[in-house]
Image (cartoon, rainbow, N blue to C red; front, side):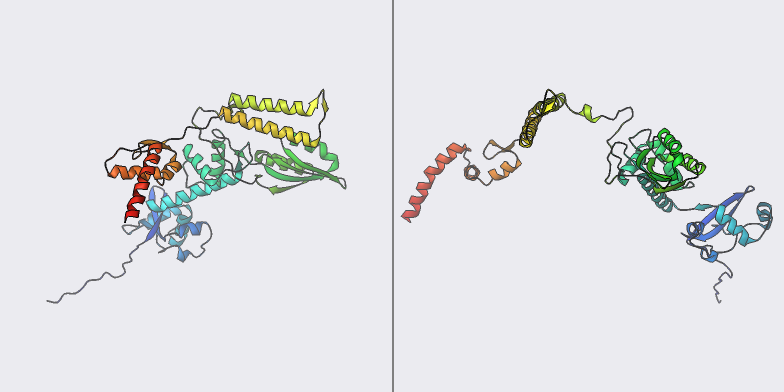
Length: 385
């Protein structure tokens, strides 16, 4: 009896696919796409539809291979043209991804949001930006969760408003250059002062007034409208004014206040600094008149600095160093460095020999006397040989 292998004809296996799903009019419609191509199509990087779709067919269930009915397609989309429906599902549908892919996507977007926040914020005290790792730690402390359907910039702006409620962080100011007619100078400066703008420079030339200022981003649209009404020109020279370097932030818990620098100093240090200031004033002035040469002033400053350092040393005693103990010599020998040096000493070596002979350890003085007695005996033995 002959056996024939029955192979299905026209069967198309869909493997390694990404499913895009769209629910409409109570029915579910799915299309099979290549992985990592859907996002490229939506960001307009990929423009060839054949590189995105595995098949130009609309399914009701891709995993089971169930095709969508023409009746349902006409009811939901108004047509049964699969290519047009595939394009609509590709634009509006929800991409089904695996757990690992979703985790990678969320972590990448989390990093993007933290980067945007870093570039748009500063420490209000130092006007320096925070590091990316510090921003990520603050995001975790406020329990920030990434929303894949929202843009990173929109979520970053919402996050900044949330962080300003709990931590010392603010939006960085924008640097603007405003040019308008000279007779409208007063109106502009009045509005800038109302917005608490920081004016960096002013210049008047050829009946025109130019001002460079730093402005809060929240007042940018109002400033733009004002400059247009005054028939002027506005230029954005910097989106975020930040000083060089990175800022730091302390660990904060709910209900804690940020300790000020003045309160962190001890009373003795404050009194010490006050006394030094008084000594400076006594050295440089008498009845409001300044006296003393340049060399005298420098000597007085040196004396004051020395007294300040001595007072700080007395108010902050050095912490006690942990003493290391040698069991062989039965004595404390100092810190770690002295402990290592002790092992190279003759005292330790002599007590080590006595320990092997089951003899008690000796003090340094006893060891020195015992060594003086032993050495002549050794010399005599060597001479008799």
